[in-house]
Image (cartoon, rainbow, N blue to C red; front, side, top):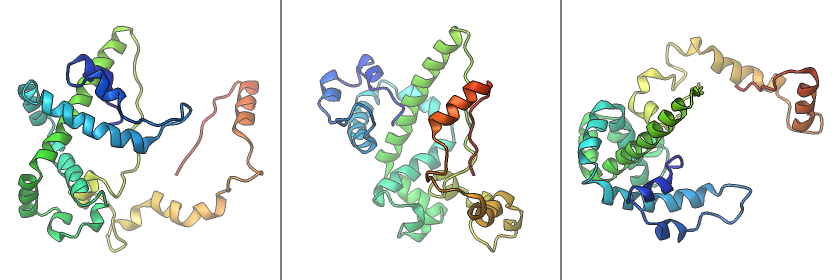
Length: 220
């Protein structure tokens, strides 16, 4: 929801200017109050969903059928809300925690409204993203994206397809998780805490400019 533009939703008639401006978005212009943004956007976007549902029904159905990953993602988000935004590993219902078919059917029916809302959010985002991408391409500009290397444990991907991930030390493939081994065994040997011994970022930038180099960082 952070990447959906409310102004565009106003232009499309899904929201009104007063509805957006009446909410608290934070009071510090130098930083983002993500909690305030999250709390403010959800009720706004649910309102947009109610108003746009009939209008977008056909396009929404096409989008949903073309993106099968949405089903697990939307149910996961609905379940997160249902279980108080806790990690899926802490959900009391073992059947849904372990992604069993009977529980999936039960909760899909029980949480249908939320499931459809989270899919509609993705529909709105991809609609706006496609429009932005087309505009950028029309200017002969190419976009380079950064793909995530790691998948969070508390994610729809791990919850719905745990067999693709190394979740316990008894997994026979754990010994091949070289990066995981490096992180667990070696980080403490070369990690330097952010003390006065570390150079300041502005000094690194100045050095790079002086020697005509690119400033990069590595992370594990």
